[in-house]
Image 1 (cartoon, rainbow, N blue to C red):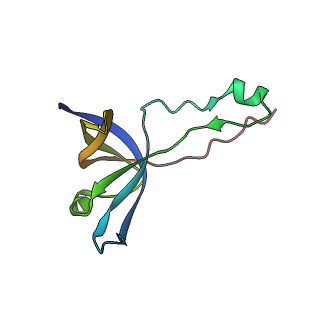
Image 2 (cartoon, one colour):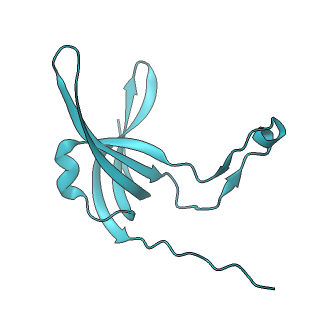
Image 3 (spheres, rainbow, N blue to C red):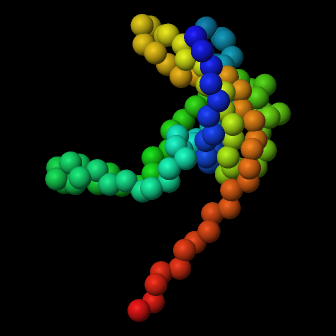
Amino acid sequence: MQAFKQKYLCLSAQTYRMETESGEILEGITIRYIPSNELTPCEDAQAYERGQISRGIKAAKMTLPISAKTQLGLFPAIYDVEIEMTVVADKLQARAKSIEYSNEVKLVEVEKNKT
């Protein structure tokens, strides 16, 4: 399958390590990110009609091999992520192949208009 690069706003990184029942060690890095360059908050009108709330920017999750920890810098930040499309159980799935730090991000509070 073909791979492509995409810029993502990566919010956090956390390593994980667990042992399966068979004794196999699974370890890697979980990255929480916003899968778009568009940071417009959303509101789900249909959810609101059902009495539920669905607002804001939803973060997605990707995993990387533990060896990728040397490629990580500051968080939150913009990272160039190489995505590879694969077929798993007859379903198309995007997998992160590599990650590279691009730019620092600073979160700034916007003051309300005082009228």
